[in-house]
Length: 292
Image 1 (cartoon, rainbow, N blue to C red):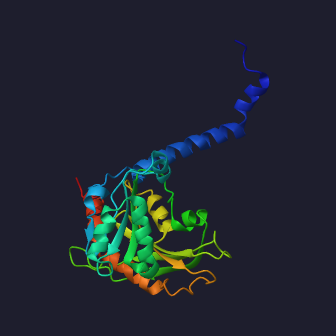
Image 2 (cartoon, rainbow, N blue to C red; image 1 turned 120 degrees about the horizontal axis):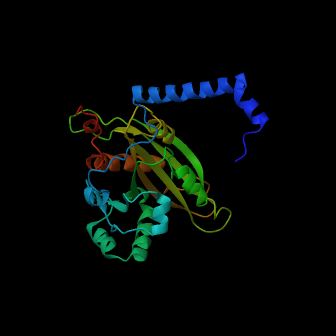
Image 3 (cartoon, rainbow, N blue to C red; image 1 turned 90 degrees about the vertical axis):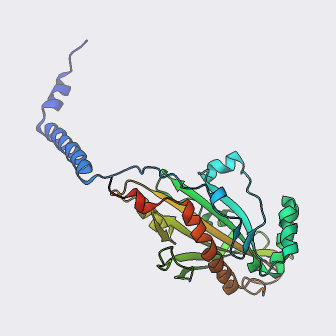
């Protein structure tokens, strides 16, 4: 084996090279010591859900009754979704939808059920809420699948955007108010703009439960997950959608069936009944941090 060339030997003996090596060694040792001393965590430990959403979230939530069965989604779609813990359900308000209609919806095949639900939504948009709950843990610190991206990709444009602050959604078991905000967005179907056909306006609300707290912003969720002082990390997204038909020639907001205030009120009512049950499925954040 040939010996190192004189130029390489000179490089290794240059003061600047030696200083760089020493600095890197010191930085490496300092970083390791810092991580150990402050117990920093660069990868969150997964936190198992306490109860599966499919079995833990009841089919009846107060006045809201589920009319769609829990079915497994396509494996490819699940891979994109990024979790095996989810529910996608259609709930109807039994104060606005009769018992006979509810039984018909429960027994109807998927295609027929969608047609019946669309008929109900055409006159009673806030009587139907399409709800999804998805749970993530031990994954990257990005927050995927927020309506602002997914709905736009499906041909809808955001026409209204606000944060509903401190709605009355009940109390925790210990009696303290369940203070939270949730995002509310109004979407308009752009695929049929200018055409003489009915279009669909969709109102979407969502909120996250992340590391034991409610957050309305995906950026705040990301900040939770980027916290180097926290060993664990999870978040669940609760999303609700109401839909209303918009007659040909109407501009966004001009259809009497798409009442934003009515939609928000329905979502607040739904959250009041749904959140206590969803919380029972999620990790006990305080128990994770009890001294051992």
